[in-house]
Amino acid sequence: MENTVQIQILPEQIEDLDFILFQANQKNGTSEKDFPYSYIRKRSIDARKKPVKYNLQVVLSKEPIKPEIERIQYSSVEGKPVIHIIGAGPAGLYAALEAIELGFKPILFERGKDVRERRRDLAKLNKEHIVNPESNYCYGEGGAGTYSDGKLYTRSKKRGNVLKVLERFVQFGAPYDILVDAHPHIGTNKLPKIITSMREAIIEAGGEVYFNSKLTDLKIQNQQIKDIEINGKDRIEVDHLILATGHSARDIFYLLHDKKVKIEAKGFALGVRVEHSQEIIDKIQYHGRQNDEFLPPASYSLVEQVDGEGVYSFCMCPGGIVAPCATEPGEVVTNGWSPSKRNNPYSNSGIVVSIEPEKLPNYDPENPFICLELQAAVEQKCWEVAGKTQNVPAQRMIDFTEGRVSKDLPQTSYQPGLTSVDLNRVLPDFVVKRLRKAFVAFDKKMCGYYTNDAVLHAPESRTSSPISIPRDRETFEHVEIKGLYPCGEGAGYAGGIASAAVDGVNCVQAIAKKVSG
Image (cartoon, rainbow, N blue to C red):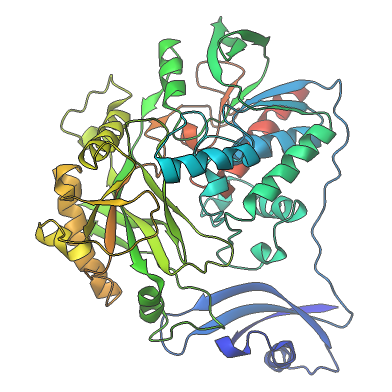
């Protein structure tokens, strides 16, 4: 017999399991004689006011209990019907795992390298400013998610089985805590091993995974996908093609457009990545508590309506690092990530302005690339003003709002280096104006946030895809092309690791439904 109760405790009580058992029984109107065993099912922090507390959902039991996940045994799919998948990010990997579970053989092509080889290219990017256009923070095994933190929180729970996605992560090596924490996080240092385990399971079951294998062409006949070309030479017949190429694969968008496959301009967001010291954020969020062994590094979530448009925080990384995420030479792009312990001295977050294509001054309904072109132009301008290197254009926060170039810049986590720049030179005027107003407004919500000790890194431009690939809501197929399944962030149907993984699962389930009739 089990009972579930909600309790609140102080941070210094979080490791006292006997106290938690006592409090849960007291809340339940029982004693340890009635329910001598317990475990924590859900955990979150309530820092809205003093004192900071943990919210716990505690399961009480009469018998010893050890929470377990449903572990899937993947049977051989040799000789089974094939699903071809382009892209080994979370959407592609989870599509492959779901395919095996449902009795299909996945054949997965990834333009980049495996996680181990990929690290070398990231080191060159950070230290030597050399961008490998096929192997970087966005391209390669695990996709952008592998080296961008591993945050698994998503609001897209109505789109599919998020719990199943989290349990698969645990099955392949993630800590069980991701099933407990309200905002689950794995950490960039742990993700590569987990991703490798997923790939090994796919291959062991009879699936195929190919790296350095880029989609370069596709053939469509009678509105049906017929074959694909890999690396400009190998042509492969396909019946079901899941296109999970991510939000940065611009060449794929242009390829689809050239092949008369319908794509559409999509709203995206543009701004900067803001870095504070973690101590500042902890002090603000935890009402003066700093360097607290019982509390994790504090995060924040901010949103403000400025001139009728949203300005908001994105991908907030406590104890994190700002990383160079360009996918082509001649551009600068920023993103952020955190290790599992989130123990770096800085925190960072994207602060971005929502941009809708129809509100742009040069809007053309016939041009699906209008947002992509703006995105690319800003990234290229940032590269130019920063000396045509991977140095990032940077400015102190108050200097930015008051329109002056920073005389000096503090130490930050961005390894390639900073160049002091008036960010008005690289960001559109309407983005600058809204950011300036938003930073002042944010200080009313987080007193102390607005400080000249905070540094803005430009640009934060890859929050989501500036293109959508329209598909049928029921079949998940492209609205005009049978057998083509646009999937994940690159198609406009996800916004992070968990939601992309869910979308990969959904696409395979749609294929299975179609095949079964």
